[in-house]
Image (cartoon, rainbow, N blue to C red; front, side):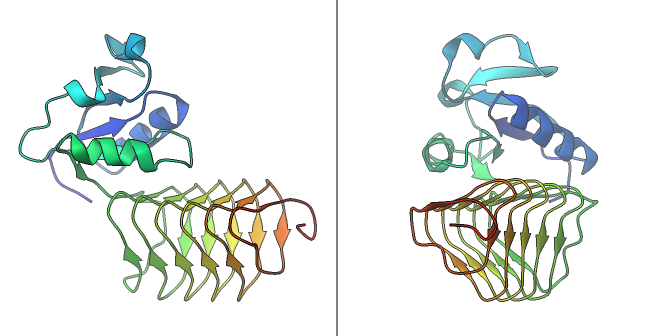
Length: 204
């Protein structure tokens, strides 16, 4: 996204600071941070930005927000952001390569150095970490997370709420099931069942 409309960042921890940096590098104005869990942090400034309790921020006329909690189980926070009247912003870092054939849902964050192949479908509230690679004709479903440097080959599917750790690799024509966790550096050569946790080379 581009433009002068200010964007709130939902979260106050280290990942929120990183996303705030991405947003600035994309030329976005930041309204502040929204604290979703610790009221003691919902005051003053954090990472140089003003902080408000998520439900107390007073979203006016559908203000924009990005969910940046650093936890791949982001559904609850995203639901609260929507219930508070915010619209989901979408952020693609200017140093990411995203072809025109890519479909990206609302709330998604694509970090710097990410390279997206042709005809990729990315759902809502997805995080594509810095330096990640996504092959052609791959699907990343809602709330999927690719850690920094993850590599998903072509014609694969990462189901909703699945998490790929830093440097994880998924071969082509493979499905990572809903809510599955692929450990850092693991190499996935066959389908991963929903809810499973796999690690190693090959991942088991």
